[in-house]
Length: 225
Image (cartoon, rainbow, N blue to C red):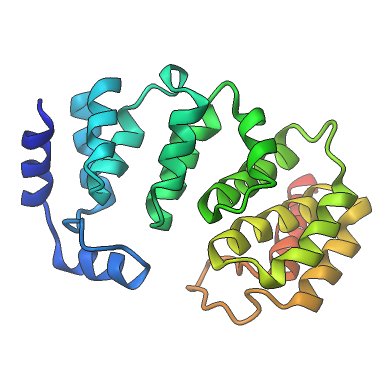
């Protein structure tokens, strides 16, 4: 299957409501408005195809890039290529899939994490904090959590919205997983107030760090009973 054929299939799956939703959340014009489930179905048909994934990414089309993250082979990438991919995409949905399906599974992600934690590029910084949040949860050895909290307390109020989101995730992850830092994490969240008034659908947990932390800790305690 060629890039042209895939773009034609994606266009045929276009949905105006999805397109409008994407625009509302920051997508540009290079999109069709395809449901996530339809993209996953197409990826299952194509299977892993690294060269095709790179070609799809190069189109800049949102759905093509989402599809690319599902059929790419992370171990065949290089640090430079991943960094170019990260910096070239501003739509959060694509950035999240790139992190979840590619960056998180990349063997040298720690090198990228360290580099991106001191970058001025917004999307690379966003990815750096995503990696840091993941490492706090899964492999915290060697991390200075107090210093991370210092940075969050100082930098989050003025950070770009894209970076705030993953920085806030790191704050909540520290508070959830480390009782010795929980009180301070909650205090930072309360004082900064980031996402305090964020609209949340029924049944979903607020991204406001104090609520998020307390909700998840409560669930952990219930599961132990």
